[in-house]
Length: 363
Image (cartoon, rainbow, N blue to C red):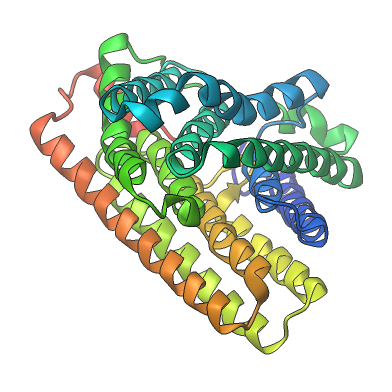
């Protein structure tokens, strides 16, 4: 279907409106509830609505919630004893868990599932390295946020369903890239691991890592971003998503500092979703740089939501906001450098499989 056709424009418009409606309502609800890790809800909603997939059913929704929650719960029993008492073994186990999460994506499972798995693993490291008791509270917060997030995905689809005329066209899957062989998948997974694993190790030894959970979530998403983009595009994607997301967060923070209001905050996120959404969706599929812009929107929410919970306009909240923004920027620069060095020492071979890797775009 041509991207500029009428039916393609209508599909894209509905998806953009869903992204704005679902993400803003999810964020408003989570802010009102104000539970720990409440920003997980809009992130969960936004991540699902920023894809061209149809609404997930009950079984798929439960599976997505478990993909985010299971690594934290399972890791609290398997990883935490090593994180607390034997760091060398914990480093290896975390590396293996992250590698297999990225490898599953490279071999064909939906990237959104692997993203939630990666976030769950890294959160376990960030929290467990400081306080074992805090992990249960984090698990509860993640669970509540994920459940609320999937509910608002369903709500947005119920309010803005595809018309019967468009439903068949909207659900037609985009052309699938050829499944890469194990050799190419291993290289993709190792490249993502080079972005996330060193930062996870730093969090493992950092006494204040629990204060920067947002940064760890951003780094986890960067691992998936590095795997989604081709070698020629990944550096720009990591930097671009951080820059544009950071700009949106700074503008939003300055506006909210003048008028701190949950209602105005909700409208601000809805407007941001409309702006970012125009760069995410194109026709019945995604824009060529849609993944980068979806990660930019995620970055904006990651930076704004915890700061607003700290107390919009307060000096302490402002200091925390700028500190998170600085660390996210450093993480993006490191990620871009890491993939550049990795590709320099382990370049793609240039055969058909690797060329497919370069050309493939995230769903």
